[in-house]
Amino acid sequence: MLTFRFATEDDCALILRFIKALAEYEKMADQVVATEELLREWIFEKGKDACFLREILSM
Image 1 (tube, rainbow, N blue to C red):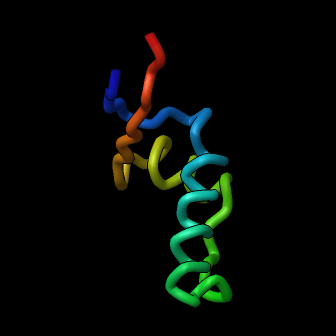
Image 2 (image 1 turned 180 degrees about the horizontal axis):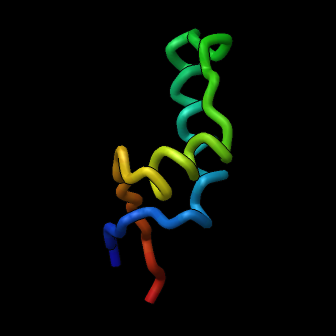
Image 3 (image 1 turned 180 degrees about the vertical axis):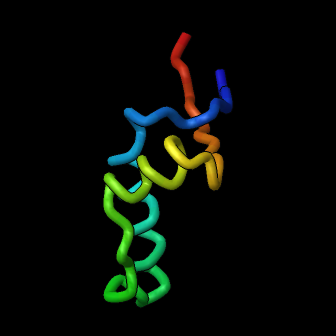
């Protein structure tokens, strides 16, 4: 089963991994300044953005 959900503060490490992987693919890894702390602050504390995650659940 495929589901989508809003990210939570517990997902900051995963979100950062996705950001770094995309930056690496685009050959822009040296430009990533995000940290888990910055993501937590700007997404969850200040509410400046939202993040959805897709999950595949086994039955």
